[in-house]
Image 1 (cartoon, rainbow, N blue to C red):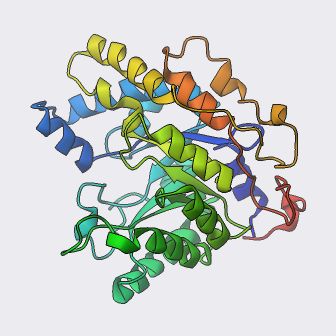
Image 2 (image 1 turned 120 degrees about the vertical axis):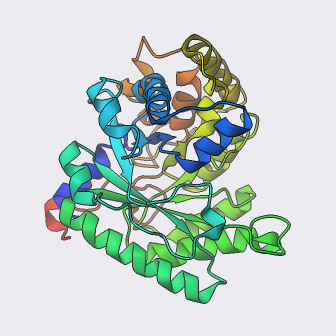
Length: 351
């Protein structure tokens, strides 16, 4: 059940018709690792400059953007890189993606909180969660972390995005091994019961598995697809599968800006748009909207933020616009073929 304040916060992360087309620029240690592999050494100021440049390219075409507290959120806001119409989400966790397989329990970033994110102007918070339902002790600890984050975000009036990651254990050839899809689905089922505002989930491997994932999440909690480093040639198809199954959109990171990770600002600006344009080239528009799902296809037209941004770099809009025009169900989801934006007035909801 959402309060009016938290319902409004969730609205700010989506288009007027409820589509979430998110850009993730909150990478920290993982970004450092990628830059190191390319022989690029940047100090803290250089990381901030790079992130602000990426944010300025992506934020005008997105409905929301993920920015970290350490390097980028305050700086991007101060620099005018994020339009007021684009929602801001800030991570709560101390670690990033690089050490996800070695984290027994997610730690909160010291000196940071949901309340501080709210005061800075964020509409949401994100919690990265290494999580495997088949590792009982860790799963229990991580569920405790989620409960703490849910309580903090409810008090602050933020929408909480929980991002469980099925990771590779010793002996696995790949994350989750043969049980990957099963673990993604079961993890989503368990975490949905803790009532975050959004689940940001891995692609489970197929369109059929996406249907199972949607059923596991249930009708009360929306879910979006994460990029997970998928190549530009496959991400469009994954988003297509997820949104046709019932996902409420996507939040994609490095796939959008990977080619722009170079030291020269001009080269970065030139390369990123081309990559994003190629990424979207295989996307096929959906015929169903998300709010409500039974409405005509025109109801899913992207918002002004995605389509009317004339100064957005070429190539930014194709992925964000085409994917945001896919079939995406609304939150919370009523029974029947249509998923209305709300089943009853938000004032009737509590905490």
